[in-house]
Image (cartoon, rainbow, N blue to C red; front, side, top):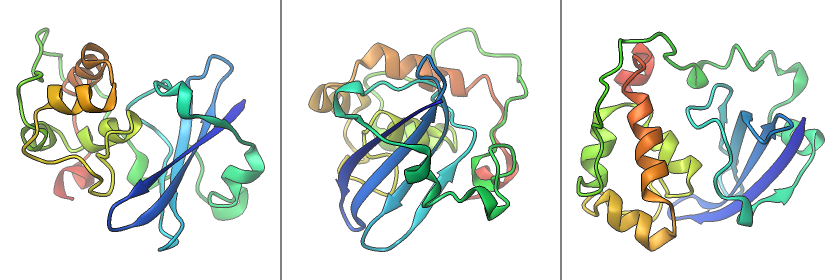
Length: 171
């Protein structure tokens, strides 16, 4: 396994560190975000986004650093973390794009309960009400943050081939 970390300020929550556990091809197995000011930890054991896209902002990390906030003896494993379970059962797929560059962030967020996780994986602030505005378009946000629009849209469209978990849909 390989371990990486990145950091960014999160308005209203302070500074955040994200720790990633990856396979040898940098495929994300699990990750967590730790908010230094509040002590809040968000663990995701089954991420929607399965690869690291922002390699320039990554630093090397270690299993020990990840386990400071995701202890091996916590009873939470990659298969048991409730907030991280995903709907991997196929719903047949749409075969066409459902997300677009000209839709607003708010519209995109309302389409699937895990859209914010995808935005967070691309460091677009979809986690914890970061600096992107609900009224900006997906294209504007990608342009402002240097994110490849087509890659983001492809990952977002992949969400629509999966059924959301019942608890995720209600949150």
